[in-house]
Image (tube, rainbow, N blue to C red):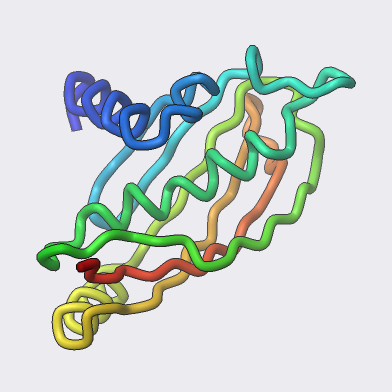
Length: 148
């Protein structure tokens, strides 16, 4: 994606979920099989000077919406069903979340949602600080569901 594409993706995310804009979230990567987003430390710092747990959760969780947005199933939207998070280290800097979804899994979800109106998928995400230290890991359970 170009810088313009990423800026448009970021603006789109902010329009759909305005709190992500207030967090300063920036989309770094958005493809059918991979997604990444970053939050600055600025507005995401807690009462003792490290990244707020809710902000780390949010930057990881929203990647399911980016990945889910690439499916071509009329009327379908990605929904989060459950997300488990392990905080492994305090984040003292900006934090970046990254995840991937294999081509095989994307094909399965596409076919199942087309046939049944819904399909579950899982994402494993790592959140790192600016030094590359893993500060959190998530296991997200999502569903692509036809609405209406």
